[in-house]
Length: 126
Image (tube, helix red, strand yellow):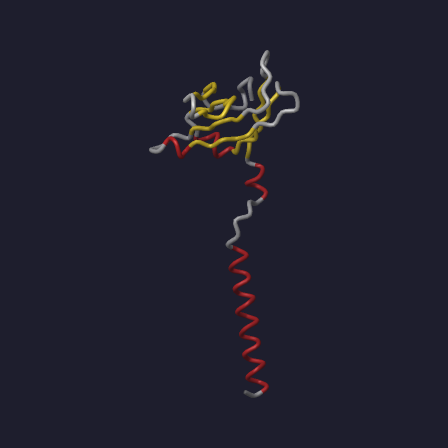
């Protein structure tokens, strides 16, 4: 192989690698900044009962209810004031929310929660 053929082959490899890197880079699944900002902070103040953990279950409905439930873990510093970060896309699609105080217990077949309809910015609990 001559020197010019080697240089031509090397240029083709570099172009191929560069093109492949661009294609793979554009197929990434990292969220962009607008996706990260499209969420709503929901806060709850619970009187009289302190919890170590709370979850917010969003039931989106649809043909298969069980697979359409989304759970969000709450953040609290005192056990009474809870904050949940809910994507706007979920808030627009839900049938109802439920505050889950304990996970489902298969031994006793119990589930502790309080259901309510979706929240808007004008709701006093949001």
